[in-house]
Length: 364
Image 1 (cartoon, helix red, strand yellow):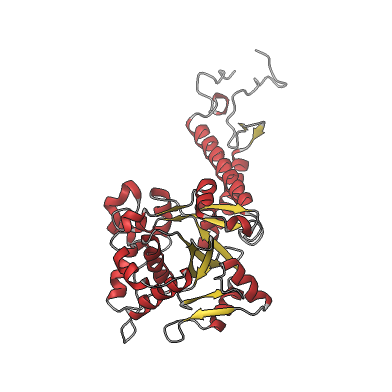
Image 2 (cartoon, rainbow, N blue to C red):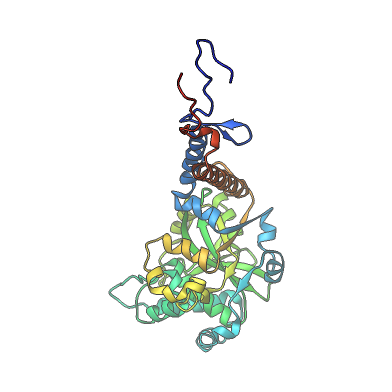
């Protein structure tokens, strides 16, 4: 055995507290831990805000223009998996809807009559409908029949259910901001005669129309309101929650439309939520918002939305696609770091172990 100067043997197999990892080179565990923490902090920032997290959790489809958004239902179903409840499954609502719209000759008039009918169910003193949208249309309609006052989303869900029960098409519209905050719920209805979508606002209890009396889509209505162009409103002057001024204020505060692609309102019914975990419905549905939404998307049906490209920026600075790529990258790096730390803690290289008595040469 070679001797070091002074007669002492060389030290081999010495244990080092910060032993290097072989991970694309020699990397200390402190560096891996620091890398893990940095990526975890950024990921935590993403999921700490429901508006940001929803943009990643939900299936958002960005389309190049509003022309694509206003495609017929058949085209949306073909290209973006636009879906609705089967008409036959809503048979219980059809006799009510047909009786209300009997004699109406236009889609706008039929929608107005249904809106008036929903408002006619209200009783005083005013009691707000506390049920969440995800209780499904049957529960919401039952509560409206009891005289409680529904909000924009609750009344829109019932209106859409009536419209769909008569064989036509509907889609929910969410008014929001560019960073994903939502502030108003409404619905667009398909006009078979004109072959176009038109917007019906249950808070306004009416719709906007152009010079030819054709009902306007939500995109056209928003454009006209924001540019100050004159619009014609057809609404009930007595039964409403919004004035035109209220609607204009809402448009300015929430200038982005999110179009819902999966308009299967029955999937929110008690028997359908949370997929295979539906047996635990009572406990899961009672969880605070937005935990119930997150679990519903992970276990049951995933929410899908359509939005015009460039209108939405996650966190105010990145597109939805970029946010998804970044999220996947963060999760991948964290997984690699955790695997590296775990693997090294379970099987530390032999040259990092403290020397045993057999490895220590006898003293001279």
